[in-house]
Length: 311
Length: 257
Image 1 (spheres, each protein chain N blue to C red):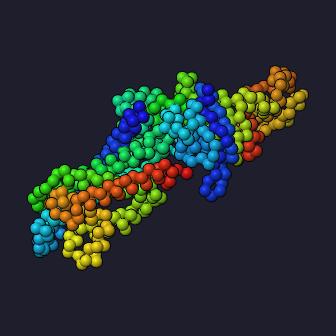
Image 2 (image 1 turned 45 degrees about the vertical axis):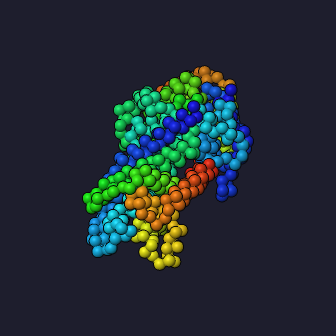
Image 3 (image 1 turned 135 degrees about the vertical axis):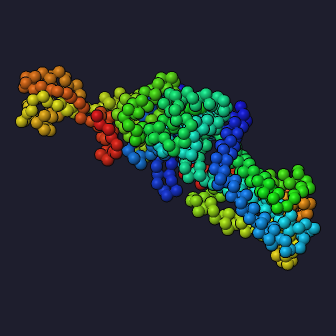
């Protein structure tokens, strides 16, 4: 069964700008799905329509098989949303924000208090429960929004750039938490500019550009399209010239850093054998950029992606 | 299930709203007590002592109901307009929009918050008035009923103002240019019988007149308009404004892109 089904979704704003030009998208139950795209591609408009924050122009959205237009109240019960911008009342205590949100979904206060304790502890916010939301750090506010979205135990969780501006330690703990709830059966739809995040977490991916879906497949299918990868070798012994490596193109960045391009199907052992022949010793190696990032840039045809986090 | 869920959501909004204005009680509950206390001193005692009785009551006794209902009107309106516009401004209206709360529940929740604040301030002003005069209430039922309906009506009006507002300036325009003149000219400080015929007839088109006089009827048993007339007019406005609120939320005007 599809957790989310979108058919021929369009949105034209009052100023005539066409943000979505007929989008079709299916997300299967239990999936961890990445919706990627450059700034202004239409990601936030799609999410806004799914979350009933933006009125669609035409098309249909089905949540757990329920038509959002015809039966919005039932459909909304299945949906939890973590928006891009902080949108809670900063003048309310942390615990109240969660209890109120649960109340909007019909969860009784006594039950909401118990759930708030569970999620605040899981997201390491229990010690802050009585504090005003405005006093939380950026990372804590992000985690608060995740806790809030889970208070009514939704089947689908939509995260719009949930780790933006969060340090790497907290980001990784958030990834672990999201993977855990996904394994428990929650469908997760993620938009992010951190492509490493999408590659690590998501099973399926859709790329949206200029209001159209330009790619929709599994993560493995997409990554297999990458016909070459560039690895960066840090050398123990400095070199003056790039060595001649048969079958591989290489480039010396500085006398201790060598970049080598490996085409799909090429044997990396052959590369190392040749490096040993040249008596070149390697201290360590890394990918020049994230594999998904390379594909993404190729697909959307732009090099203006902010916040990319190539490793 | 649907009703139960919505009732829980309704209670949540009301509790949130009441906590909001009680948390900032120095801004919400104390100023009307001080303002109305000054009205009682200046108009009731200093100026009123120089004036003759109106409909058999001293000027102080005559203006007490008007000042109480005026504080109910301004505070029920102010509560909803500032709270709902605040939710728009800080984007936490989205918490409600993504949830399955029915539009009528949102309206009922915010309006109930406005009613609670309006009536709380009404009670505070009544207690303040006891320092200046001895109050006698002719009919508790009519007094409370008119106060409740008036608070409901102006809470709805505040909600409509907040839905349309795009800036904090917009939420002060209606109270300044519409609400205050209508209230002051609605017979709070005088009986329309004291006006020339033309202005008396003009005053009859002011809906606030019926609320002030309905409330005065409940407290003093004197009025410039019949009680039935007052109740019918207030109810018509309540139905009209509720319908407008429902339509605005359904269309997402002012709150959705």
